Length: 406
Image 1 (cartoon, rainbow, N blue to C red):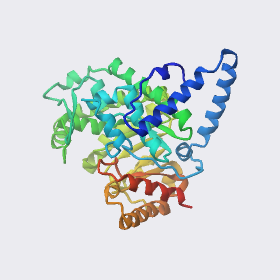
Image 2 (tube, rainbow, N blue to C red; image 1 turned 60 degrees about the vertical axis):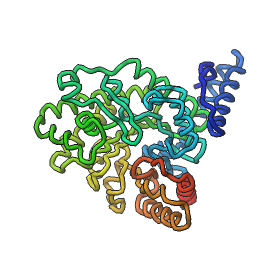
Image 3 (cartoon, rainbow, N blue to C red; image 1 turned 90 degrees about the vertical axis):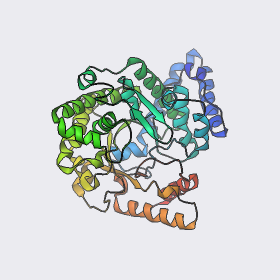
Image 4 (tube, one colour; image 1 turned 180 degrees about the horizontal axis):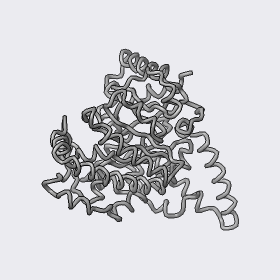
């Protein structure tokens, strides 16, 4: 697939050297495409298709997710585009609203490419946020510095019957799709071995924000509503599941090669309720997605559920992302026959001062993971997203450890 002239018209931010490099690569691609005359166009198009298909065959993340031995152990990071990068901070200055930045195709593509330009990574993730789906449904969403997302509350700003009528906003979805198409096209040419990952929040996590209105240590209001209004709660989770299927389908059709479902607040759910509000909704999403897109690999991230993560091997997921509460020493052959593991280097460790002591700890964490998980069933990542305090030197060092492991 060739990038057309529209790409050249796209204005990318040039706030620093890294963003200039991204822009330079895109300009080169656009220039090459514009120099192809009509007689050679079809030949060049065919040649590029062959190159892309060959490159995709060797993509380490796709190899692991499709039960093939990767040519190298894949690594990428949750929130790898973020405030720990100076080029990201410079880019962010251009927007008053984080949502505006997410929905601006030039900014979102530039942000997604920044870590790929800086680090030797195997995965690129769409620059967005799990709250975008709620925003697309018409629910008020703001991001406050130091507080995170502030969301319109169910029962206060809108009622259950109102929510049942909400539909995904076409204009918002179109902006998401356009950005993904552009990002996919650029990555195919500038980083052909990188796998593009799309994502959405899980029903339970979105439900928590809808009931609480913001981040909470225990999401008291969400759990109380669940106990007092169980049938309505399950209905809301089911409706969210359908919206998530549609939202991820748009991303898949736009060009993402893997989708990930983030259940950030799965760990607060009492064990006896976990099947109803964590496992069943995700199982429902996976089943419907596989019907629509049978070849798409799906990663789930049920943060904080400890060793319950092995239950996901009973579903059609390709990998389970695990955090620091999970025991990766479990030698579960049945699990690895069905699922890969993604994780689980402590993200806080990477914020420590970059010195010999920290490097020794990073080596220990990495080797514990590399020695306990079959390397053909492993995608190295962190226990959660990279933090603003993350040391770039620590990230580079961790990548070098994974690259040198034999």
